[in-house]
Length: 113
Image 1 (cartoon, rainbow, N blue to C red):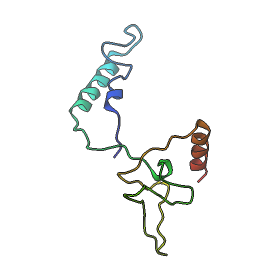
Image 2 (spheres, one colour; image 1 turned 45 degrees about the vertical axis):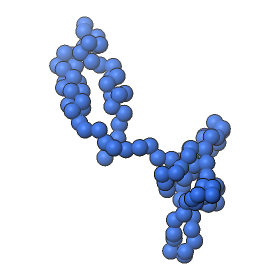
Image 3 (cartoon, rainbow, N blue to C red; image 1 turned 180 degrees about the vertical axis):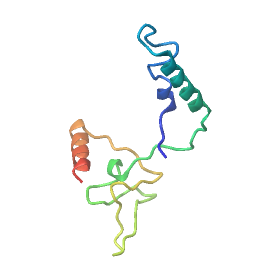
Image 4 (tube, rainbow, N blue to C red; image 1 turned 90 degrees about the horizontal axis):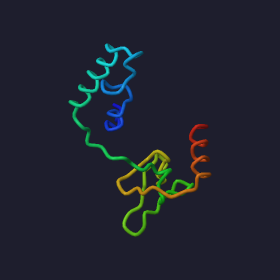
């Protein structure tokens, strides 16, 4: 399943009230309208955006997590060592603030895996 932003879908540029009537194809536009009407009837999914460990302010480069006095992020491995992986997440995650350079480095690192 893939979640989408339905509000952005509503802003699709080809709509019955907004298209090139001289060069546009009315049948195509009516098809778009039909799909949009169908999308409006679909139920909303109960979902929240998560913060992955790699983006969490409590996660460090060694896979350790210190959430403060009240919790710590852990996962148990076969060797018994507790660590979190980059793509893990929890309900306490808070996105770290980082520089644009760090964001670029993180993206490059992710692409080269």
